[in-house]
Length: 131
Image 1 (spheres, rainbow, N blue to C red):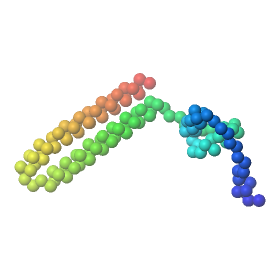
Image 2: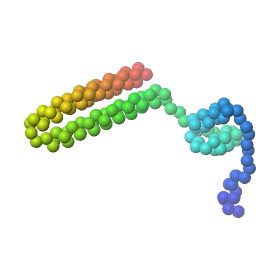
Image 3: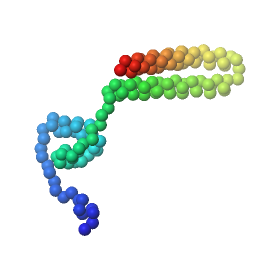
Image 4: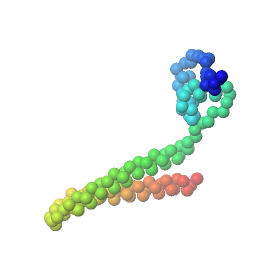
């Protein structure tokens, strides 16, 4: 007999649950490494170990802030690269003066974003150094 026939699941178990119970079951499933409800239910019903994902909430908050800062820094870098490319295409001093006037606000925004990033990183450092 082949191994596929030996391991083939042929019996069904079905039962009814209330909507709030169903939501709770899926919430518990979501907190595990299992992708399918049937895998999770089989392990729970057979009293086998279930691997639960654990995430530190503080680490999640820090990660989200760092991702946001990375995105802002990328946007600032892209703006700077575009400005430098434009600068390389200018051939006269009058064009340069106009460009400098137009991009002065972008430069100020970039400096402001960099200061915000420094502040947030210092806040993160302060929060982690207390623990």
